[in-house]
Image 1 (cartoon, one colour):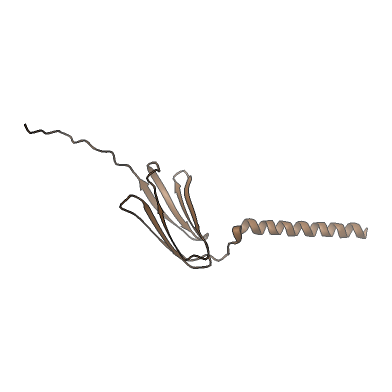
Image 2 (cartoon, rainbow, N blue to C red):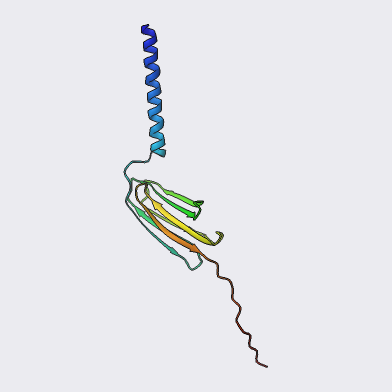
Length: 133
């Protein structure tokens, strides 16, 4: 009887420890710290039509930059690791279809969202044509 109780106790202990470790891995992927890093971000377009994103953050926390469309499809994801304090990204959005996109910068607790609208200008023809002879 003692052997059965000891075996059950060991089995329950191992199950509990394994479950706890699995939950810790799910809730804190890639060993990310629970403390969120404060950050600042800025975004502008270049003369070539590219999107420039700048992020400054505290060392010790992760920040994620994500570009999605209105349906939630992700086109770009960049994680800024806890050891870096700055990141500069230049995205070529010329191949993306026209529409409304969201650029999200998040530290897991705080998220800033900027809207990006892509609209291709159609060449216009003049309303009337004039010729001099």
